[in-house]
Image (cartoon, rainbow, N blue to C red):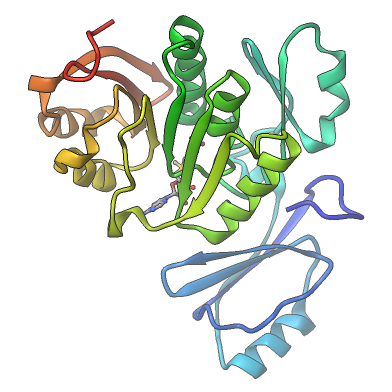
Length: 283
Ligand SMILES: C[S@@+](CC[C@H](N)C(=O)[O-])C[C@H]1O[C@@H](n2cnc3c(N)ncnc32)[C@H](O)[C@@H]1O
């Protein structure tokens, strides 16, 4: 996350340890620690050879790899800048001034950090566009939402800004949860949104809500689709898959109770908007 004196991301210095048990790391240049399975990936604004050696010595953890890269390269070569998905205007923290310049858009201020959900991945953008369209057409009826794999929290924050009253946002990456919570604060969405750390492979949260958003990956989506408890919501925005996965995923849907309202695509990514016909007449 961005902490003073830093106002943007430039170079990323990345150190991947073979252990998560590294002790307290209190360093002003630390962006955050990403825990993945049994490994920890540390992101710094500056090179940290001496500190990394200290951490290795005290914890007996070994470096699996290290790398230095530009923030733009981390973000797939893209420049993370202000963009609009009407009526939302989303600005990274370093372009906060562009929000006040905008005429009439609903502002979202985001620290994208190094977490999925800057708004520049095609699947995130598809989700945000579908969300704004759905809430624009049925905003009075959608007041509760679950966001499965929230990343930066962007989709949940967008929904909160568009009037969804109660949103539960889940991610298994503690660093993603910290970034999402910071973004909740930046946008004053604390009353509407709760960010929770949970591994969704170990259990499904209550999906008896108006809308479930799941921008995830095929394996987890297939697990959800096979679980009758997943199908308690009225609408579903599902993404995170490519055309070659679509047939297998489609076959796994309980179509007797669903209507495929819309299929959208961007680049090689796909999205479905589903309505649950047992909960709501199809739109
Ligand atoms: C494709 S990203 C989507 C992020 C954001 N919702 C967006 O649309 O930009 C998927 C997110 O799901 C999280 N995730 C992956 N596996 C998960 C699991 N088993 N339990 C909870 N979250 C998971 C990842 O950490 C990541 O933040």
